[in-house]
Length: 382
View (tube, rainbow, N blue to C red):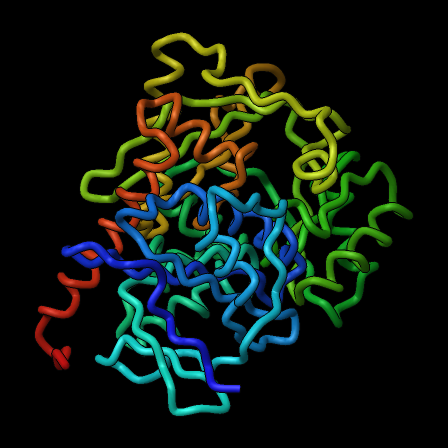
């Protein structure tokens, strides 16, 4: 069967921007990405954009998501599912700079794209790997670049960058898989009192994260975390409020109103984020003007410390008792959740930037960055 031409509906006199929405991926956050892609694709203005949905399987194969594309072309007459299926025509990932093309695996046929919108949470997507591939292929893309993506995905390196910038972060002990767990446990029990948090250094959406209350739980949690990454962080448990700030742009970076998460479980777990309705998202957070200004400034500082571009969600603990260290940076997410219940778009909406306008701006930022970089010396413009 010959590959279907990607002409889409009748195009306007001014051609629409072709956006490859890249979803799925090889990480444990595969299903979250599939759900995010539906919300994003539904919200891209069809008069301005032609959406090319491309799914990546858990094994790493790239597929033109034929069913998803057909659904989008028939919208709004056809309802969309809660998550796109990663199935369709096999294609070859882009590698040829200057052509902006993606080719079918079993054919000479190809199609052009103007910009890629990666919605790949976690490793092999949020960690600089996809960004590096797109840079090599000379394709514009949305979001942080290779450096910020890699630094923010690796919590060890992120915390080093934040500390170097003078920001307060949680105290931690690092464990590497293959090293003696007993030695790590001894270090943890010297540094902290229980409970503590154990998390893979390279993972998001609270996947592989545990709150532990004793030595036996700690050993089990370390073993769980090493299923997801070679490096594990064991962090002090901070008693404080969970405050989040969205960042848009980078020159200048604009911070949103802060929001607060009140977890429905002992901590804001994967189940709490995506599978239950117990967690509460308070937007705006109940903070006074000085606190708001402080956390917004710290969010911009954290974003700059990690070489952020275009967008991120900066997560804080607000400690007002005990050591009373104030706002403590927990982490930065360079591809934050974009579902209809996700904090990043909700924070931006509360700050006056609606979902559709937010996507417009992120695409503009990606195209502008691509144009700037193509004009730099040492880059051959094809």
